[in-house]
Amino acid sequence: MRVEHEAETLSTGDTLWINGAISAYFVDSATRENRYFSEAYIRLNLLVRAWMEQNQDYPPNNYSFVYETSVAYVSQTPKATMLGLVYQNNDYLYHFKVGVVFKRPGIYSIDTDLLYADELNDSKAFGGALVFYYDMSKDYHEAHLSAGISNTDTHYNLYQALTANQKASFREVGDANKNKYYFIDVVD
Image 1 (cartoon, helix red, strand yellow):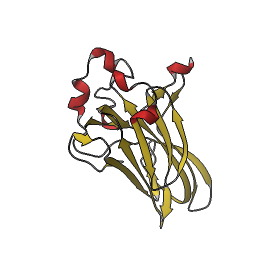
Image 2 (tube, rainbow, N blue to C red):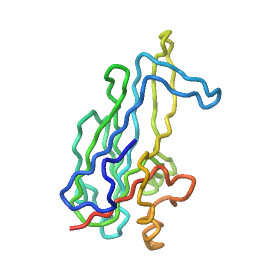
Image 3 (cartoon, rainbow, N blue to C red):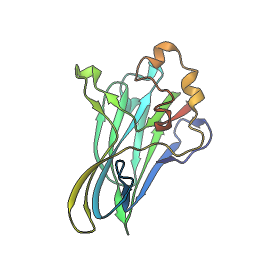
């Protein structure tokens, strides 16, 4: 997945574009073999999080979305929004594209990490991607896809500058999962 923005700041009202593409094969994590497929349904959970305390009220007040490809669902908590992005097939290249329009200043992240539903008194975690596909011999398979952000600079320094209270709003971002986050400072 790639965020189409290199600077660490963005102005309110501007669109931050996110896209991803997958060719028609996966690498089996156990055997390291390529698994080619003919048809697939690929859904990736993309999270938009507001890290600033004053923005943790109601997500539609903070941002809206522009969809260039399909979305299976939009789920919101007071602190984050999860989009079920659906990859579209175009000649065995599966892709998605979505834009985020920020309405308020603050530190936000776009990520593919886990969202724990603590607000719902539930410890269930949501994240990653589900894949249902038919291989070239038309056998049905299911898989899990782990996605990261491919930008060379994901502005991790913005996360490190947050207060302990702001960081405590979500799961800690560290060396093991920071490749799944892209931080952006939205300014007026």
